[in-house]
Length: 167
Image (cartoon, rainbow, N blue to C red; front, top):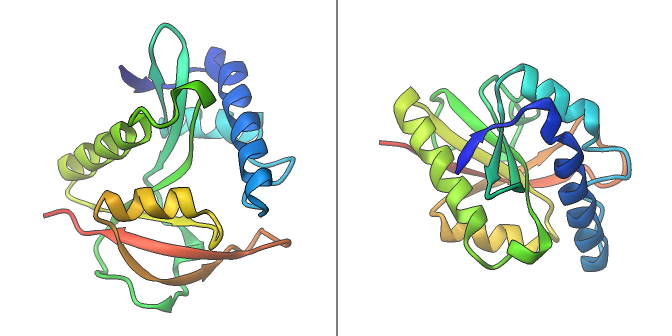
């Protein structure tokens, strides 16, 4: 069941994120640093009603569905598919033992349904070396639009940006 996260979910969320951080490091790139995302990041997401979890007798996955403008997306080396309003998928991670069970696809489908209800598109970005996420994004029919640079990321700010037009 996908539901809005609550503060008491944060310890389980941080376990999932720390495990995902290890996987990212094993793949050889720096998408999530040691201090991001952190508990405060998720507290802010919860306060904005933008953090969702997959709950199967405990949190097994997390996803932020951000409904405000992403200022990092204002400048793109490429072109967005539209100028429509959009939601952005961020901070998606699945507990290690549930990977490859289509949990992330379920979260993408949930985001699609929310965007459809709101009449907005979906956008997402990922690190150029994050091939598993790139493959999932493409599998979910997002279209590559270009490169953005994260303003607050000093180590590896380049991200591949994608959009899904909701009709």
